[in-house]
Image (cartoon, each protein chain N blue to C red):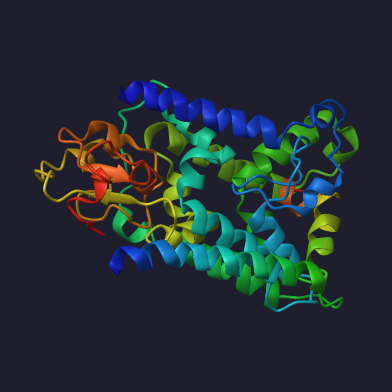
Length: 299
Length: 48
């Protein structure tokens, strides 16, 4: 059952990636899509300079608006972030993010002794909020040149998704761009390789410690339409949910933790069936009303 | 009441988000995002 769910999640992740990065011609010609669908932000960390990208990365878009020198706040991009966050919170990370898919696949490689967290996890998990505030918002807004425009600091110096999905395919297929490679590309490749290697041993290190998009969506987990509930009448506090959770969340205590990426492993494992999602609550059970609401919600 | 509030909050947030997207479009942010997205972002791919 757990394997079936993991397989389903991988298919959804791959299907979503194919759907939102379907401009095959871009990969062949070393160009990017220039159509009107790029008005729209996609939910995951999906570089708009990926040759196949049909939509815009919300983190890239946020920096583009803030570093333009024209706006101090982005209604448009915050609107998209709030929309995706209020609908599903970090479900986006678990099911709809291309870089999440890459890390999931890397963690399946049978190398190294697998571990959930990096040493210092309890402190490192707050780093993504520093990245969000500093590299996505403050630095692009405040460090500006003579034109009044700043740089997209997160994209420029950190984002491994941009290097992997944008940089590598474009440079492979476009000789003109290849001739412009310098120290910045070396730095970004170093970061990408580091995250790739870490992802083989540790589960989703980028999502846990660095991703500003996960930091935003996590804040919506407790209030999103899609939430988890724990039926306290059924829960036997075996802590099995935390043991199977690769994000290492005590689900029986905090089903809507900001770290939860909604993979659903805890629901599948729970021996008493105490963990439910709000989607299941909408399903009316014969004779029993709405089953998941019987024990109340533990948040 | 508690459950009702939990159901109402995300709906209010969704309504607010749609308003923000509309306001952003009127302010010209959507055009700015499109312009950025249809040109290769040198910084994003590591050329700067």
